[in-house]
Image (tube, rainbow, N blue to C red; front, side):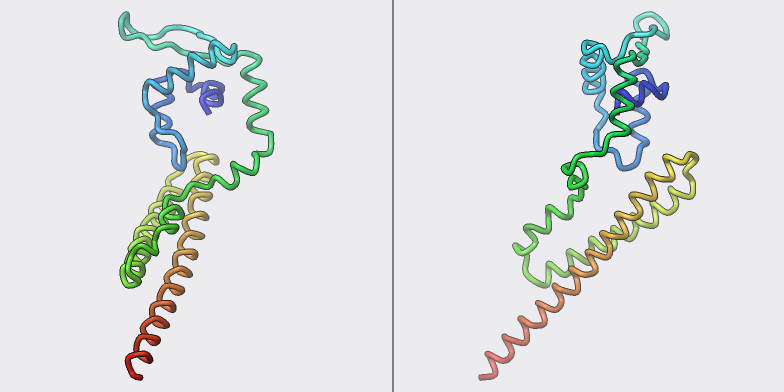
Length: 181
């Protein structure tokens, strides 16, 4: 990602951090130190090179450019088919929480999933608004991708909610039939 940013003219650590903070669906928290460490590693690997220093003394920022090897690597990254782990690595914190949802009482499970559905519905609306405001094709595509994932999550949550309700009603009907004996 850093190499691609340098190739796109986002060529200082400061500019990268600012851009990452506005990117939807990113997977990297842009801490200042981490960006500069990556740039130093890329420079040591001859993938980027220092182009110039810009600004006033003691407040200069270093701007980088891609080396020919960096250009090749960015192109390869963009054109290679991602590995299976990247497709499986769709991040969803709710999916992880679901593994432990049974720790809650059935009624609380249903309430929790309903709460998730409400927040996800708000996210869908937010993504629709963001997609309408997006200025470039890549921004539109990212919003559309996230919107598809959020809609799929809503369907998944709806299904989970229905299953939890069914299990709860079956459980209460079993209790009623046992107590009626």
